[in-house]
Image (cartoon, rainbow, N blue to C red; front, side, top):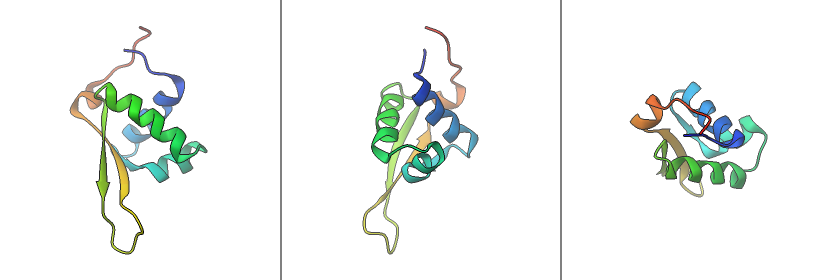
Length: 81
Protein backbone atom coordinates (compact mmCIF):
# COMPACT_ATOMS: atom_id res chain seq x y z
CA UNK A 1 0.00 0.00 0.00
CA UNK A 2 1.29 3.43 -0.94
CA UNK A 3 0.68 6.63 1.02
CA UNK A 4 0.61 10.16 -0.33
CA UNK A 5 3.52 12.35 0.69
CA UNK A 6 1.40 14.30 3.20
CA UNK A 7 -0.28 11.21 4.67
CA UNK A 8 3.15 9.63 5.01
CA UNK A 9 4.42 12.73 6.85
CA UNK A 10 1.52 12.56 9.31
CA UNK A 11 1.82 8.78 9.78
CA UNK A 12 5.58 8.92 10.38
CA UNK A 13 5.26 11.78 12.89
CA UNK A 14 2.70 9.86 14.94
CA UNK A 15 4.71 6.64 14.76
CA UNK A 16 7.96 8.38 15.77
CA UNK A 17 6.33 10.23 18.67
CA UNK A 18 4.88 7.44 20.75
CA UNK A 19 2.04 6.31 18.49
CA UNK A 20 -0.50 8.77 19.93
CA UNK A 21 -0.50 12.49 19.04
CA UNK A 22 -3.15 15.21 19.06
CA UNK A 23 -4.37 16.74 15.80
CA UNK A 24 -3.24 20.17 17.08
CA UNK A 25 0.30 18.88 17.71
CA UNK A 26 0.38 17.31 14.24
CA UNK A 27 -0.71 20.59 12.65
CA UNK A 28 1.93 22.53 14.56
CA UNK A 29 4.69 20.02 13.78
CA UNK A 30 3.91 19.90 10.06
CA UNK A 31 3.14 23.61 9.65
CA UNK A 32 -0.28 22.82 8.21
CA UNK A 33 -3.87 23.50 9.25
CA UNK A 34 -5.83 21.10 11.44
CA UNK A 35 -8.24 20.64 8.53
CA UNK A 36 -5.40 19.57 6.21
CA UNK A 37 -3.97 17.18 8.78
CA UNK A 38 -7.49 15.88 9.48
CA UNK A 39 -7.89 14.95 5.81
CA UNK A 40 -4.69 12.90 6.00
CA UNK A 41 -5.87 11.23 9.20
CA UNK A 42 -9.11 10.30 7.42
CA UNK A 43 -7.05 8.70 4.64
CA UNK A 44 -4.96 6.76 7.19
CA UNK A 45 -8.10 5.71 9.09
CA UNK A 46 -9.68 4.32 5.91
CA UNK A 47 -6.51 2.25 5.42
CA UNK A 48 -6.82 0.99 9.03
CA UNK A 49 -3.42 2.42 9.96
CA UNK A 50 -4.72 4.70 12.72
CA UNK A 51 -7.83 5.67 14.67
CA UNK A 52 -9.16 8.94 16.04
CA UNK A 53 -9.88 9.22 19.76
CA UNK A 54 -11.71 12.19 21.28
CA UNK A 55 -10.79 12.90 24.88
CA UNK A 56 -12.53 15.37 27.17
CA UNK A 57 -9.92 17.54 28.84
CA UNK A 58 -10.85 19.49 31.94
CA UNK A 59 -10.86 23.22 31.24
CA UNK A 60 -10.85 22.80 27.46
CA UNK A 61 -13.74 24.17 25.41
CA UNK A 62 -14.02 21.06 23.27
CA UNK A 63 -12.64 17.49 23.32
CA UNK A 64 -9.08 16.97 22.16
CA UNK A 65 -8.77 14.64 19.17
CA UNK A 66 -5.84 12.23 19.25
CA UNK A 67 -4.53 10.06 16.43
CA UNK A 68 -3.38 6.63 17.52
CA UNK A 69 -1.51 4.06 15.43
CA UNK A 70 -3.32 0.70 15.16
CA UNK A 71 -1.61 -2.68 15.42
CA UNK A 72 -1.81 -2.87 11.63
CA UNK A 73 -0.18 0.56 11.45
CA UNK A 74 2.66 -0.55 13.74
CA UNK A 75 3.46 -3.37 11.33
CA UNK A 76 2.95 -1.26 8.18
CA UNK A 77 5.77 -0.95 5.65
CA UNK A 78 4.97 1.40 2.73
CA UNK A 79 5.30 0.15 -0.84
CA UNK A 80 5.24 1.87 -4.20
CA UNK A 81 1.90 0.30 -5.18
